[in-house]
Picture 1: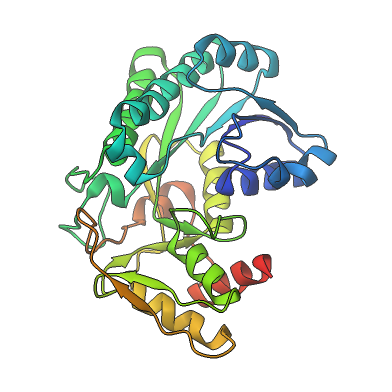
Picture 2: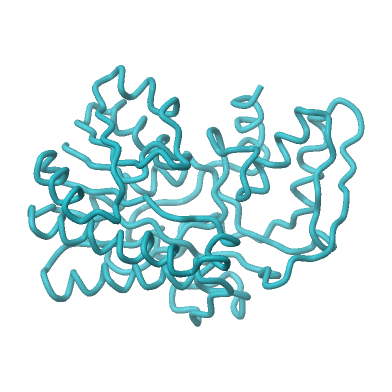
Length: 308
């Protein structure tokens, strides 16, 4: 299969690229390498994957690369993912996450791409969980421009399905963690805490630590993408474990791996932060034949091993 992966030098994207290359697919990666890392693709490039550096906000460049690669499937992961940056500069967030997605959709439509798998978000779209675990028809109530821009991108995917017959699906991830997530970054409490543990530091908890998320291992997310590419599912599909796990529980799960104390430091609660969320993944089981296979302890061990 010929596949094009936008954002393929990033945390999730590079893991997906590795899986595609490993099964023998012809892979083109599009990334501006602003947050992604070329090093994430070293092994894939040695095995034949191609990295093209471009900005998805450039419609002509996007059209040209899709015309050149002629992929059967586009996995669209390129995005602005920092919630705080979206609050500080919502227009830029929209240009990347909405306008950029439209550019990739238009190129996919023009080249007759068979399937478009869009990356979206569960918690950031649903906001505060009114139903837990939250199904796909949970009320949409983003707490930040990031969640709103990802929801808009989903709507454009569905519009292109209705208007042009382009086969699209949007995977709404829970909190993805695993190898290659940046422990020095702003997103990803698991990676940040793992980095602190290995450095002998203390994790910082904002608020009381009772806030919950649905943590899902990156390998399971890659599997969901591969299954979505071959399915007929359209619209949003939740991808998570369906379980609420608190920040304090993450600390407790990591504590046995620490050399010495791993006591958290508490900082003031951040305004606008969702208190509770988990995702109902029934649709993924029914329509993708997918279910998260990696438990939290196994996932944390693999993540720590990748950072050592």
